[in-house]
Amino acid sequence: MTLPPNSETPTPLAPPIGVFRYFMGTGPEDEDEVLLSPEVTYGPPGLDLSCPVALSVAHCADLSGPADATWAVRLKRRTPENKWEEVMSMDEESTSCYGLLEAERCHLLLGRPGRYALVGRPLSQAAAKRLRLAVFGSPDLSNPLGYNLRVYCVDDTPHALQAVAVLECVRGGRLLEEPRTLQFSGDGFSLQVSIQDLPQLLWSIKPFTTCQEFSFAQVWGRDHHPLQCAFSLERLGPSPTPPQLSCKISVRQVKGREQILQVYTPAAESENRPIPLFQPSAFKIPLSIHQRICATFDSANSKSKD
Image (cartoon, rainbow, N blue to C red; front, top):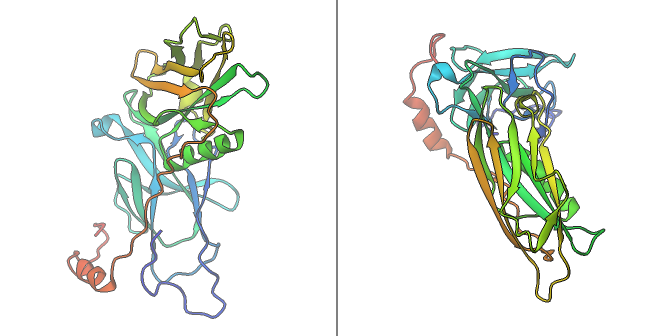
């Protein structure tokens, strides 16, 4: 969030600016709409600023296709009654709010504190959202020969992956491969996660778990809770050398795209690998440059976003 210079109301009792909080929300009431971003709050309520604040929100909509086959994206705000109200549509001009939709995030100018989120209505079955795939592993504490793999499929936003990282830190898990991105289309087909190329002379896996599946509704659905599947492995006898685990994790949409996560790790290692949090770095434009940039804009009018 960026606050323009001298934007805070100069009163001795003015409340401080609140820190952002991100929520894995349950999505809008409209069943045809999909929650494309975390819900983000700035405040406190009733905060009076003399000019709007700049807010950037990450989203998971895939906008790489033709405009008429992707998404109709809207900014919505929660009311005190916990209902959604529309603030603006990203493909229409608005005099009350400004929005610039980019490939991975949306930049907004907001003059009213509140809880906001981006929602989208798919314009065709070719519309897709980006999923972030990550595999974590940890030794099985109840079995000295066991090892657990956990595969997560979350919306491709930094905050969704951070939530998984926090959960795995508590479990003692470590990231085994750099997270990958998968385009998941709205054509109704499910998502399959399978383990491949596991050395059968060295490892066994719990029966009937080599391929697991999430329904289309679970992936495309209206909530942002991370999808997780687990593979419980066991070494076939003790090893005189530090045991190694090598395999592939395939994540694919039926009749769609596929991503492969390559796993190669010492199965007894407990050291954690740093988790990529993808926190954007903050910066501030000097006031003199800010004024020179503003001087190049068109005059404000009701039919333009300049």
